[in-house]
Length: 378
Image 1 (tube, rainbow, N blue to C red):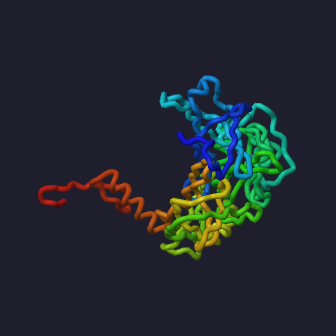
Image 2 (cartoon, rainbow, N blue to C red):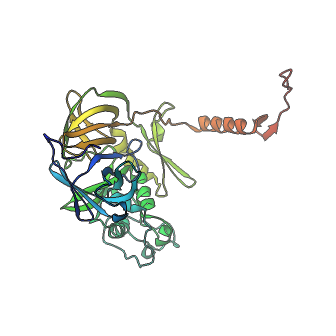
Image 3 (spheres, rainbow, N blue to C red):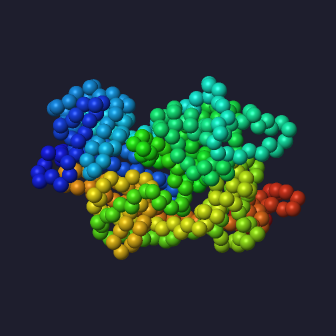
């Protein structure tokens, strides 16, 4: 097991578990993956490491213990998810940052007040009572206090696009469920960030530039770039309703981002489409890179020859000799095409035919057809 006492050392690391300093440790790896193109979800950062079983008892550590890694000019906090002693002389730990805490239940047993935060709501009929609804800023504040964050950071102009919600609609949901719904509707993802020295969960919109996020410079071997992806618009579905941005100008070969969300509206669809459509997504991968600092979401890196790139995944191996990484952004492997009414009807007929076999779909409905397989005749 490689440990951090090798000399000469280029990096000096320190590790504590539950407040107790660990003298010898190694096999350190930090990884994260946005998943897809970064259009939804909550991203957790994983930290793996090992300590000698000859120096420690595996039962001395508890799930949820705080792990602090210090080095490379910073400190990072993780929490023990699992530990194991496989009899190979090492105790292996798997830890996550505080983004993993969002799997707890959203508390609906206390009264939600109406906050003075951002969010618009227009009653649609007399049965909709504005006073019964709550701002999503209130919901995010409660998620922050429940999960132990200083705040859930999101641009107020984005939150303005979403309506107020009934507290009853949140019952039985986890904090992750609610954050996923918001991320999908606004097209982006959540990840941990530091705000004034306190942990905060921050929303990163797809295609938006984060001017306050430092760009990491990397030394690297070959960077392989794949195809580019630029959406022509957004198709948003909520229940039985479907909205398509700029539908009058779309043709069959246009590429749409498909979104399913309970917040669906034409206003929201058009608003997120202007941002999504302006961004050119680049797929790329670099198998061997050297970092001088730990790279976390949103993974902005400055490369030699390829300029600034945004990584959607990164795996780093940490030792006293340096930070060695593989990183990239998922290659666009599939496109979503806008299909007009005729194309959608043809698709549905083909699907029914494949499901039921010998049938014909006519103007009068479905009729069964007998086929003589030997003669290939009806």
